[in-house]
Image: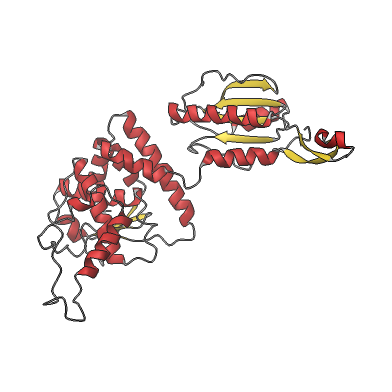
Length: 368
């Protein structure tokens, strides 16, 4: 690895921990066939001649620029789009963020106020429309057939061939896993930087957009919990609605759910707002299903608190206990020790921690 990249990456860790933590995830490889740099979500490629053409602050800024491409998901989202235009759109999207984070970039990087706050997809569509409008009119009705005037009245600047580098698409078979790992890494890097007061404000929106789930986890939770209950028509309990007519018809009968276990990740990486959402959903599921018992376990690196509520009890959750590291093993060991076989278990967590080596051997209880 180039010695100057090592130095500037270390400087990122110290001065801008959000960028530094993410930069360390990329394997740095020399690539003399590229003109500047490239990133594909797993590796960061560089041309030594290009690195030597930059001063230290510019090199640090370019590293931050490449990191933001991956943090933004640019390495997974190109699809069937044109590679060069996608590169330009991605650069227009991240360069203002890099500069607003007080980094320095080389001269002539792609910047245009019209694209501020827009996603790479939105910018790509605008670039494609502009390029289409500048094509010569085949009918000759467009006069000279030259480029259409720029919306601002000036001719658009000719972009440099590669800007700060290329955004290459990751095509490995493990793409979903790599993308998921990066989403988690972005979340953790943002939390760590925010705790140190070193997360640039402009990046908070980026992080929120990156971590926004495509499926609402709360809807999935309620659907899963509802499917756990056995609801069907039964002849054992006649439908009273039609009894006065002398009709003996089945009624919709719901058998009681056994023990429901919720584990709250009480480590320091799960913040108050998320914990409040966890508590609301636990109570809602209890009211919806009325399980035999509701068991709520708090766990960071160990089980820190256990609360048990009966079917007819009001669920008043005690304040969370914990704040240390994260391990997902202790709750399953606790259940095994207590001899509890729940109808279902839901682990509410940000997924950052040590998993069991093998899947926990939990068999749903037969008690309903």
